[in-house]
Image (cartoon, rainbow over all chains, first blue to last red; front, side, top):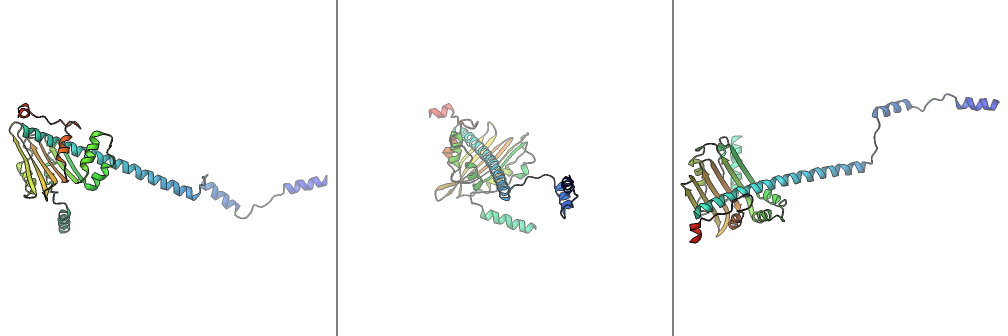
Length: 89
Length: 176
């Protein structure tokens, strides 16, 4: 049974971790869990987000401008109509 | 600093189209119970036109009217009491509408509702290049300045749309 004792001793022999293992473990634990995305995907997502926000802003401004134009024509047409009615009276 | 602002204002005035005049009525804003101040440049009009629905008859008509316009400037005030605005307020605007460029085509004074209204056209080389509408009622004052070729018939055709009452012709005038 000597060979078995020797194998067991070797298997359970205390080994030193590689240099810097403790520091790397502590640093990773401090960072927490994080998804790793490729840089191009992050850049593409940022471009899409900016483009989407820009499009949304443009639509909102366009709708505001449209409402102002409708109001302008509503006031003008009402006045022209009123004046025409007075002229014809 | 003040001089710089005056120079800047003068430069802006010199750059502005001759059909555009100063709507110097800001003193009335504080007295008004309701005020509308619209300043729509040509680029704003063109931008807004992209959002007008061509399938909607009213909006399609507005879209057509906008073509050729360089700006719409409106000040409209409503007051709770009579006499909140004065003829001097209107005179400041009227004083800028000089002949021969500006021609008064309509002047109405109604004793019934104590209102007076005028329409001026800006004419260049025989073409209509702008319009000014001044209308005062005891509790309301409106000044409209449209810069560009205005289709007056198209404007009148808006009557009946947008809650604008359609032009009503009195019976005695209809028969004439």
